[in-house]
Structure formats: structure tokens, C-alpha cells
Image (cartoon, rainbow, N blue to C red; front, side, top):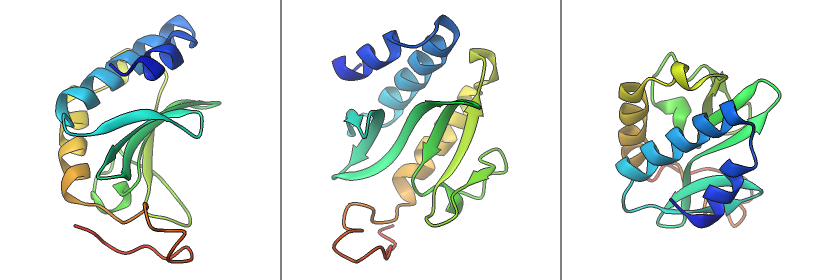
Length: 130
């Protein structure tokens, strides 16, 4: 696990740390080619410089967000972004994490991507990469 992400996880409450550790391990195991780092104060994984998946502590729980998740056609990723193509799910217990769902979503995150890396250059317009 990336050292910065490990530090982020360590700062969480015990229950939230367990969720964060399980998410980070699952993401690292599936997206082995991804670069991970703390980006805008939260753990994020990138493929070729494009943000793919990340998580953050929010009032509703630990939010797992997929930047292109709105196109995954997954009911469980029910929290949809208003402006972009993101979709999320919230966890309040490590027991809520379905490893099969996580693995499936991560595979889709590799195959379905919108170009967030160049969004500023395109003045807020997204283009589909894959």
C-alpha cells in the first residue's frame, strides 16, 4: 500500500480505518498497473494519469467513488454526480463491502473511462477514452 495512503487510513477511526484498508487492498490487488497517491487530500488511483477510483471520509460514511462509474450500469453505485460521470457508494462498516462487487467495478473502471486528465484543457468537456 502506498505510504501516503497508509497514513491517511491510520488517521481514521478504527471502523473507518478497516473500511479504508480493505478498499485500498482490493484496489491495489485489482489495478496493479495503477499509480496511487493522495490527491486533493484523498486516496486516488490513476491509470495513465487519469483518475479512476478513490475514497474519502464524508458525513454519510466512507465514500468509494469511480470517476466514470455512471456508465458502469451498476445499481449499487447509486450516488451519481450531477455534472460529471462519477458514481459512488457509501460504507459505514467493513461488513458492507462486497468483494465481488468491488472486483467487478474495478474491472469496469479499467474498461470504461472518461478523460478527466484533460478536462481543464477541454474547458470542462469530457470525452470518452474507452
